[in-house]
Length: 314
Ligand code: GLU
Image (tube, rainbow, N blue to C red; front, side):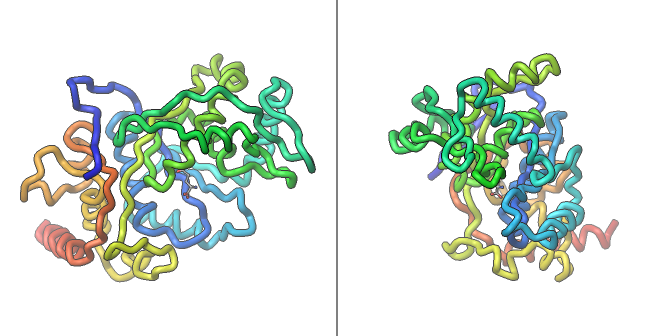
């Protein structure tokens, strides 16, 4: 089984304000995996006094669809996940270009064929630490890819996903990233970009009290349906389908909390965990997990009945 972590263990309670974000790409309906990642990041920020950012990762304008962005807003709204800041990556293109140009001036990147901006090799640490899985070695394959030159800005002037994501995380002072284990393979590349950019960004950010270093990463297990990947095109997996079918948003939050997170004391009384209770438990009274969860719709319906009955009584 997967390992879990974390804040409460070894009596080392991190008293850190966690600045988190949810960064969906508006290329399909918002599904339960993204909604759960949003909830976990929201819980981490809200229970530690940090900030929670909603970022729309829409640099790929051909694949980004405003209707999908609307679904993201509506889903956040339905679940009551409020955010302190909001940005569209597509409105930030000149900023990515600005920092990539500074990297060129600083000898950290080179202008290549067709005007693309390509990162020069950097010295990489042998590993990085995931908050759930622990030490993750950086493979020779990853080092080769990094040394061959990561593209920061494509020849059409648009940023790559890795570069835009890292620059935004730095500018927004993100220090904790919870996302699916499918992003583990991206992490070494993103750490490489941090290494190249730190001296450049620090010059601008230090005076504003922001320091540039990789965030803590926690990669959580994916949600599957009967051992198969949840498809974004699966109608039943679109969050608004649940809203429009009359599901209770608090039942949905409770259901999501029990996939990829578990309370320290996991008995029958730990099933009903409304948002207020989750705010108390999330960081110090339980653990995130990196094993897959099964989307058990019978369980969801059970939560739905419980929450609806509770609300009728009130
Ligand atoms: N935009 C990415 C996605 O939708 C998320 C990036 C991240 O969480 O680092 O998968």
